[in-house]
Length: 293
Image (tube, rainbow, N blue to C red; front, side):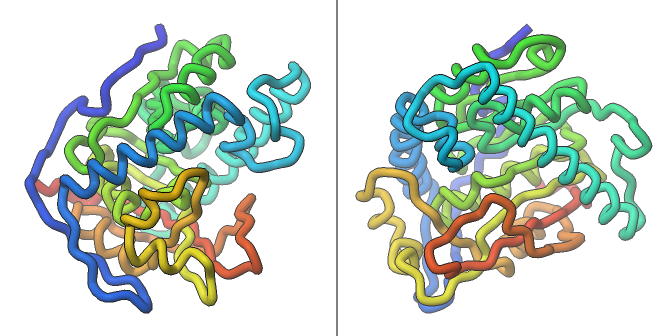
């Protein structure tokens, strides 16, 4: 049965302030109310994209642009890209875990219990994960994207999917003792402050020993996005799809504070298109080492 769930399945709510340092910027301090403002703005942007160009907003290829519906052939092509991406992510995560003395539950063809796809969109990755995990939480800001995923994905995979619309960022977590959390081509569209909140949620969602893999834009040179990353208020005022960066050391620090250990951060530019190649992108593989209360 398909299920719609609020993101606040279980909460570790803490009235806290965050501090972040971005290259070329002064230290930034922000709090939970700021995160709520940011999340509300970006949720509105993605609802609009989900109604107008849902497929292209997930995978920015010309063949998926300018339409909110796809032919059966293009639909299959779209979801096939998710199969390849998930197979690659699971294989790489499993190898990195093994190199660090850990074990992925899906190794050797096993089936995992629970996975979370953050920034799920129309289920490109979640559909593939549902072939390898008994239960998959498809988490996204946009109910328009999630609704389209629920209408488009059929068969055995559909029965394993749970669609989760995000609530107030920073005030709730998905807490399902997950074996695996995944986010590809998603966090880069969120301002750094919201990326940090998402990383904390994903770490909190893992069981001890669970594994995660996320894709981040981690550095930039002379880029038109630097000013927006220095002041999230500018990003809130601007409509449309955005690209943002999170320094690798910031991602590592915040994951560590939540009890996750980064095993490896490796370059991965798959499907990442940045003007003038101003950025570097990394896939970060991590494991839950402890529970932080």
